[in-house]
Structure formats: C-alpha cells, structure tokens
Image (cartoon, rainbow, N blue to C red; front, side, top):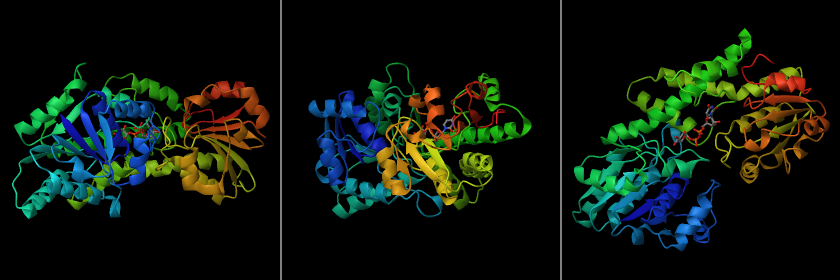
Length: 440
Ligand code: UDX
C-alpha cells in the first residue's frame, strides 16, 4: 500500500510516521519548504515524546519520505489523508481553505482509484465539499476517475500521540462505499491486533463523533471546575469529591481534574466550532456555551487568588511560575492558561519569572521579553514573592521544599493543578492555595 499525508502538523506527522512504522510506504507533504528540509534531516517542528526516533528510523528504512510536492506524490496513492490545519476562522467556525486546497490538488493529480480521507477535525459536511472540489478538478481535466471520500477523525493527545495512534481506544471511519471500507480496514489492520475496534459509520456521523468527543471531555472539565469553585465556598475539598464521584464507573476517574481551565489546539477550537455549526443551523448549544463561559472564568481564578492575597497590590511584586505549556509533555502554547495569567500579572504591575521544561522557546516567540525566563525550577524562585504552579509537569511533583522556602521571599504557593496536598504543605511551612480545596 502507498499512502500520502497532506500536512505535517501534529496529526499529519504522527499519522504518517505511525503508518510507516507498521511497514506502509508513506509520503508526507507540506508546502513549508523549510519544514520539509528539516524533516528530511531528522529535525522535527514539534516536541512529542518518541516521535523523533520513529521519524529517523522510518526515513532510514526508506518507508517514510517528506516532500513539498503533491503533484509528484499523489499519482498511484491508495489513500490520501488530508491533515492540514483548520484554524479558527471568523465567528469561531473552522477555516477550511487549506483542506479545500489539498482536495483540489488531489483532483488535479490523481491517476487511479483512491480513498481521500479527512483526518483534520472538520465540521459536519466537509467531506461533501472535498468530494465536490475533487469532482470539479476532474471535470476540468475532462477525465473520470473513481474515488471515495472518507472521514477518519483523530483522537490522539499531545504528549501521548504515538501511543494513542499505535494503541487506539477505537478507530472511527465514516465511509459511503464498501470499497472504501475495505481499503480502510486493510490500512488499519496492523493496529487492530490487540482487539482495538474499528467502527464504521456514515460520513457525517464520523465527523460529528470527533466534535462530540472533544466537547464531552471539555464539559467534564468545566463541570469539575464549577464544582471546585463551589467547594471552596462551601468548605468542601474537590480532591475528595473527585475521588468520590470518579469511583462510580458511570462517571469514571478521567478528565475530572479541576485546574485553571482547558487549553490547547483542540478543545477551545472545537467547542467554539460546534456552537457555531449549531447556531448556523438554527440550534443553540446551551451546555457548550456554559462550558466555554466556565473555562474563560477558570483562567482568571489563580490570578484572583494571588491578587486577593496581596490585597490588590501586585505592583513591584515578583511572581515565580512553574510551567507555561497548556499541559505537560508538550511545548504547545496554544490557548495556554499561562498566557492569560501572565497578562493579568503584568497589567497589575507585577513581574514574572518563568520556567518550563520544554516550552521555553515557544513561549519566547509568543510572550517575548515581557517576562524573565529562568534555567530551572529553582532559579525562578529567587527573591520571588510567591510561586504559581501552572502546568503539572512530573518534574515539579517532588521538589526540594526546603530549597523552595529558602529561595522565595515568602513561602506562598498557588497550585493551579492541585499537585500538592494542602495539609502537608501547611505542615512543611507553606501558605498554600489550591483549586477547590478547603485549605485556602
Ligand atoms: C484533546 C483530546 O484529548 C484528544 O482526543 C483530541 O484528539 C485533541 O484534543 P489535547 O488537546 O492534546 O487532546 O490535550 P488533553 O490531554 O485532552 O488536555 C486538554 C486540556 O484539558 C489541557 O489544558 C488539560 O490541562 C485540561 N485538562 C484535562 C483538565 O483541566 N482536567 C482534566 O481532568 C483533564
């Protein structure tokens, strides 16, 4: 089998590399020449645990190639994945121009039957637009080549992408012909060996599945953040409540961790897009609107605690920050709650010293020299008036508390991810503020 993957972002690069890993010939295509040059040299545009080694290995085996040309890659491909970006466009809807661009090129250069698969998260109805774009091009060429369009949403998480791809909970594929179903079943066969299911359905349902999954997860988080805020008011501890409800199998113990709001490239964008799709079609997604509102509020919660503690006068105060990325094991800063926090502290006249194990370069691009970047989690504390824990990197979970106390001007910790236990922290001599705990 030969496959082509259009787009070498998170999804495209992981998809292409993992298919190559099971022995399939893969060409990953991107219009960004510098990116492709680098990938051919084994230099990756993103940090993702395990990905670099897999890219280098599969390139050296000749199964994984990188190219800037769809024209030379598409002829003879059995499957072409469209995995280009769908950035938020006007009013929160996903911008489909890159998806349609690739579709047009597929129509221009295809030579034999193939399945065109949308892998990017695209609104319901996009596969139909892709089909039309390809048809148009074939008409212009005055030629008739059969093809199918399928929808195969990706559920991988940044930081765990390789594992998620190689050992998926499930693979969802929307198809409209038996032939396409067979091609997709054959393609995914190597990933189904351990009983992971492949679920075939119609195309719109597959497109909707992705949005419903991300929206449900975002809902769980916002729900818990709401409960956490109420716990504080009522003197309850959300850590206990979380354990209490999470042990109910119907609720489950995953994705019920309160914090400082969800971020990243998927949840904020997909929740917005689904609200927009509904609105465009005369329906109001009331729960999701609340999910968004709670998330916006939650990004302000840690700042409010800090500001209250210093009686509204952060002017001249130095605040240390552990973590910048939107979650651990990634350098992704998109929609990171740290950005909102930094803006608020700077606007209040405070100074920020920050450290993140891998997102420092990304952060410098976005935040610039408005804050001080430090070499490690201890440097950051030097003469700071308080420590904020923003991202729950494993590196921060078992620190030298005595050293923290020595370096900070005051032993105050605001823990936006509840990585420490309030009572233990008090015993160690810290003034400690968590999210939704009664230790505040
Ligand atoms: C998500 C989905 O999990 C994935 O299936 C989809 O393909 C893309 O979107 P990702 O954005 O990489 O993946 O991150 P994820 O691990 O899901 O975390 C998203 C956000 O939720 C992070 O900001 C994280 O800190 C936050 N979160 C997660 C919580 O605040 N509490 C939780 O209990 C879990």
